[in-house]
Length: 296
Image (cartoon, rainbow, N blue to C red; front, side, top):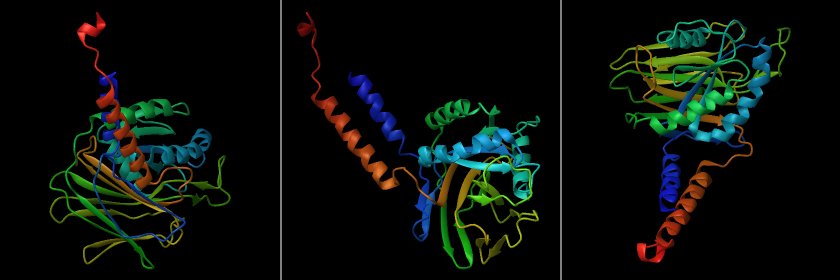
């Protein structure tokens, strides 16, 4: 009994190691500073015209809500109107470790191709759970995000090794009229811009080149990385510390400004974990240990 309780406490404590921040769309975005954490990165290759994607993509919003800070989901659009330089560069990075050709939807979990097709999600879930239990403590890299009338501003620590990849996502992006669209009127977690930061002073910005992205900009201003997206009322910035030549991330964190539906806010979630941990600890203390004499 004590062994079971000990395991439960360990699981609860480990569940606090992720550090994503989700601010509710109902209020104003507040300046946020976080450290790279142990969030699991899930990247989906998808397309507007893909019937299977149209069926599974709406479910991903619910999955993202249920996982909270445990998983950061990214939609990499390919061969459609939302494909851009950022999504192509991200898929090229995946190809450094796996250059095979895949259809849509295909899921990469922490850089590893995990599952392909409509029935892929069970394999994705198993991979997420496996990664949560094995990821090592990441390097301490701080990310600060602020928002004003001029755009979304990101300040960050440069990595001592590897690369820091900043993924800029738009939520509930409206699909233009006239396209082959078997799904809903919007798509979620669409990658629209990307910046790759290397140790030292080098960096690479991937601007969108899609005709549907007029007005989107990503720029440096006195060391401040600024993203302007006139259509994005709901967005995420995901920071990924990862190897330069491809491979499993060292650490991931997401800062999101989106609608929160039916999920626990971070403070309440941690409070519940803390309370349950105390309860289980008390059970360990007050659960009597049967001695050998009592058993006889």
